[in-house]
Length: 200
Image 1: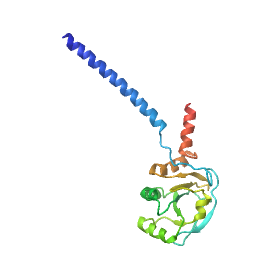
Image 2: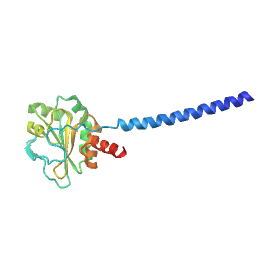
Image 3: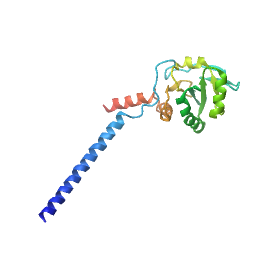
Image 4: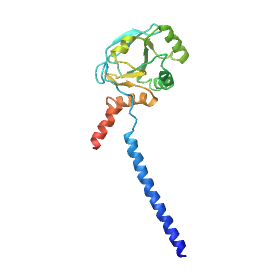
């Protein structure tokens, strides 16, 4: 009988210790999650900075239509997505990009931009089903916004100012540009830094 009681006491003690360890681990997971929170699109300090007025540029799309970036637009924002037919990451992002272009169409105009020979782009547009979105080949636009690596995106707000920009390698990075605009911060990195500063 004494052995039974002792074994019961030991098992309850072991359970209590395990419960305490689980709570400690759960707390550490929370701390780690805060430290490695999604960084969002990587902002690069080049070209037009967040908060500055986007230069108004006009050019022709592949279909011959006139397109304009920048400027004040009543209730509409522009998402400029810089890509290349030779960029494998760009291709993997296209389904997510098309989904964003369709689901956010009520307030967002998606424009695809690249440079290089036009024939390759025509084939790329057809192969990837990008016909619903304006697609332009303009080296000037990329240089103006400081695009040096792909894929890159610039979100211009209704007021004609750059709301968010950065390298975009995942769907989360793409979504982070919209979230940065909604939170009125330069980037998700800036938002997290401000939050950590307030908590410190």
